[in-house]
Image (cartoon, rainbow, N blue to C red):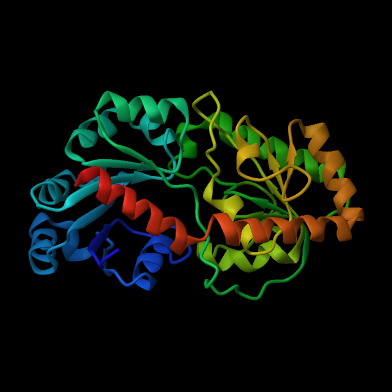
Length: 327
């Protein structure tokens, strides 16, 4: 594949998926530019000036930006580049912000989604968009920050951020899960990977740091716990970014199961799935006492991530599909 000029539009922390994709393209030899959409680039004139000077062949748009800054979005649409509509939280984005997503979709040339549920497929078909599936990827070159040891690490924010304010059920479920673990496992140290601005006890939470700084905590925890709060029903291979990063960093993960995840990681071999709070408590208790088994599973999972969720490999495949479908 020849080098392409690719503009990534939208903000990101270095360790989040957009940053991972940006670095992967850079290492693949593409000429890349990240526009965080802050300061002068929030204005349409500033963005148009960047587009005119850089002359991108592909503009990779992070979906939330398309409804927050409609004037600048129009500047993107007016360019001659191939427009990639991307989000790693679809169908949540479509369910929580249907009007904004509906307004943006018709202007794009291809839909790249981390989710491949029935609703994502139907959405692409509705607008006649070629759809490319991009699972979460891991940057093996991302450095791991030093971190202390802990028993249980719950992956996910424990506070009501913008999305959770629209998902009170999700917030309640996560709080209930954390409380159940705390009560059932006695003095076991439970740490929340997120912000400590909620009403949870401060000793439950990590200090508020950038997302990529959490990576070093995953291999240092005896057990990492993940929970899904799916909005759209139906089978999906949708694996949130956090589990892939956790396993890729060497963490042992007990993850809430939903139909289709067996296609992502093999239960009992590369990950452990839980289905009820009782099941979760029992499995956490078991693997806290059987760390040799946990570490073996973690290592097999890590090798699976490095093989199948490698950022450069996946991004090269996806770019090839994007170019082929819009030629």
